[in-house]
Length: 422
Image 1 (spheres, rainbow, N blue to C red):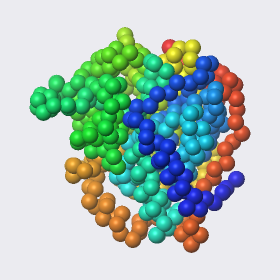
Image 2 (image 1 turned 180 degrees about the vertical axis):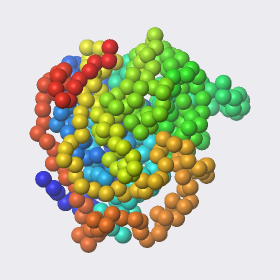
Image 3 (image 1 turned 90 degrees about the horizontal axis):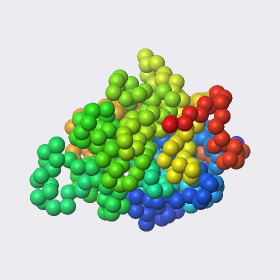
């Protein structure tokens, strides 16, 4: 079923979610009831059909199933607005059973470069898209950065983060790469900022920047992420230290799809929707990615990855620290759509040109803002036209019929294969 949602309703939904999320700290606690499950969903990137399939396959939020969505709801796919609205509606309807975290694409600049702005222009038309884009940017700045599930598991989008510089002397000392130290859960809980509109690695936004952009590597050490030009890279020794010092057994992150893992020989490919990246004496670091057959749009000369998606399922019996993974294929047939961004723009997993300090490390913010301040004219798919005359946006918000958490979390052997990471 297809519903037309008025722009005023969209703005009201976003504003209500912002009001709910704003008081939350950068680190939120998820303490499910006994005998319940927690599902952790990685990047979904506007693949609305596949998000609906997650609810159908894993289950809807309830007292028996808490869902944590680990960021990157928009950009790259054609249905970022529908995906975002669906998740916000669930958060408002079941605030105790749904946790929404921030991803690196929930930032002002990424939404300009990787499609969300273009999507809003095409669907809302000139004169209406800016109010929704502005409201979404404010909402993104309120999203928590991480969630601790139970006592042993930390969920965050990118990776580990540097300890904040609390004194000038400490700042001088940490200019050396070998002086970088990982932060703690206390640092995260006390963070004075969730990063603002565009975390750029400076000042109060540095911790948020690291959380959103950092990546694991196989080599030991903790140093600047030169391949992305933002955030950090960290080895298994850093993960082991972080787990031990914070009393954790599992770090569950997202951020890297099959395209990001292509050509990386140090870590496993993201073909199955999840990977075990660091296995240490103190616990593990794993990646979960929940957009199948990603990215939705690829240049004609590029082969598709045909990757599976996965959802990590945590249970109380293991203190939510030993996940099983529900693997999902892409929904077929796919909705017909065209990209809202230039496929020739370098992927967010590649280093781009140096940028001004107020940018999140992606491209020239001044040019992007000049484009935004124009009359809303961007390259739009020819098959889609603005619908500002009706002030409505098409949003397919009908959910599939739910399945019980007890049934949906039971291991199965079918086309959707389950694997437990022991």
